[in-house]
Amino acid sequence: MTQVNPSSQNHTISALILAAGKGTRMKSALPKVLHPVMGRPMLAWIMDVVKKAGATDVTVVLSPDTTQFAKFLEAHPTLRVATQNSQRGTGDAVAAAAKAYRKAAQPSWSDGSLMRGDASSAEWILICAGDTPAINPQTIRDFIKASIASSRKLAVLGMNVSDPRGYGRLIKASDGGLKQVIEDRDADPQTKKIMLCNSGVIFAEVSWLFKMLDSLVPNNSQNEYYLTDVFAASEKQGHAAFVFESSSEAEFSGVNDRIQLERIERSMIKQRINEFLSHGVTFHLPETTYIEADVVIEPDTRIFSGVTLKGKTKIARNCIIGPGAHIEDTVLGAGVRVGAHAVLIGCQVSAGEVISPQASCTDLKV
Image (cartoon, rainbow, N blue to C red; front, top):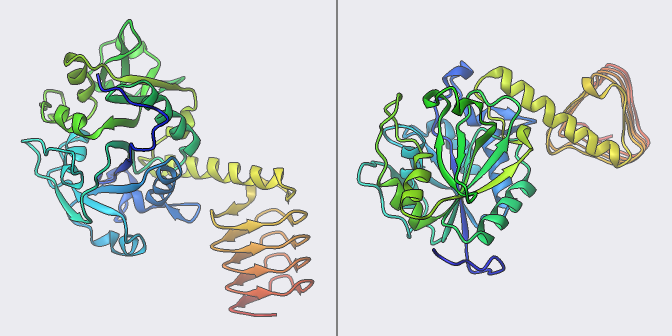
């Protein structure tokens, strides 16, 4: 077994984000991972998570038609892009990125390609889904640290859930290592009772992971290459995977339809508002406020019901934002009063100014 020094800084980590899914249940022409959550595409959220968790570079796996990603890719010029040309399951999605890694050998059955960027020389790979915007970077940092300390070639982040339906179940060996992952659709009644499930987050030694991918066969009800089958393959080679357990089930919720999208955004907005509350901002009926990720609010500001705060809005101390106001890409100086149902877009408002109720201002400086 490869021995890894958990304190070593020589083990570079590359993140691989799987984003080639069609997202048909979204009922949308827009690719699923580009749907916004608090003003940011879901894919941008998970990119931020993996970077904060320690990834030195990021590869995203997309479908061959990347036309709708043109604007996103232009905004992220260092993002490496691999394409999953056949789309035959999660194992095929990861295998499609083989050419993105110098230490990886492309599985014999894979037809993936590297569309943009040079191959990474990273020794380790962190795999996440592109539709999980609520993951806490600290959870991933803890997972990586524990995985490296375990000195194993493969690791999976398992979550203990209250309702395991739909999730792959983690089957552990007596020594705590992972024997295999059984997908819900392939599980028998006894296996379905297991509450420890696959979060979809995997950490692995690059060369070993792609070696295990080469052994996969689409022997399942979907006739797909399951990424999770690498765990059983590795266990047979004497290298059972490490299992890191988390109870933060909500973090790993994926988005498959508009209902789940709304639920996750609502949860993330609530979390953001709670952060502002803890730093001295008052929200009256906070459940009625919509706020985006890049909004900044200073202490002693009061936000009334039904307010919308979007874009790169910055609100200084001691402001009062009246009910139903819409403020977007706007800077408010200290002590500004914004009347009910006022609309401010792209404005700069000096300290102490008063904006009348129902005022509508665009690109205004006062």
